[in-house]
Length: 240
Image 1: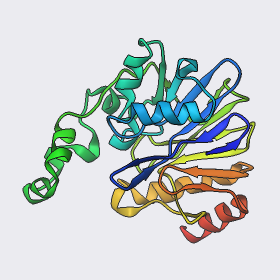
Image 2 (image 1 turned 135 degrees about the vertical axis):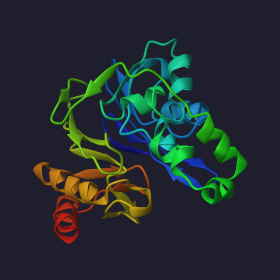
Image 3 (image 1 turned 45 degrees about the vertical axis):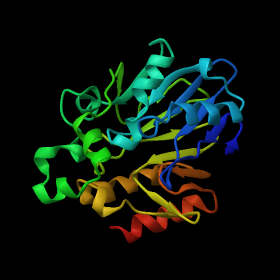
Image 4 (image 1 turned 180 degrees about the vertical axis):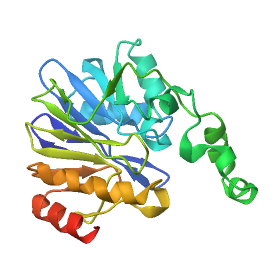
């Protein structure tokens, strides 16, 4: 779904579960924010083609955080590009993405035997063999990347230690990752069952008030584009 000039929300689906990476581009460069689950390279390529962006224009991938459904197809994308794509993430999530540490939410040692055995076999296999790839550059709060009109990094920890959101200055679009969810176009706070530190995650919402946001893309639930600034103000007050 093209939501602005040079910005598209990709709509991926896996077993009825919707995921929404974001693609941004200009005449020379394209960047992908998050990469879906393992095995989703083909639908990512198809979604890029539908947006009018050839895969070989892709120069970088920015990861909002370490979770499996965000880093899943990263190794395939890097390999398909001939290892010419730069990968960005926050320093605190870097060792998990690179495989130095096990993904926090997929760590067998953090689960009871009952919880582990309740998982489908395919999920246990993914948890035991998670995707991993090198992070070329780490990001920090307030940093601005000089791509596609400027991308501001907003450090929003809580969902994971190194969770970031991204503000696309040219289109005034907030790519929130899992810092928020969207339900029928309405913004809501992070889901407690998937959030490691709920207090931090709720506090992180206040950082969005510094931005002038016309549209917000949540990885789960997709696009919100009506009175977004007012929604953010209300959400920050409600969650305090």
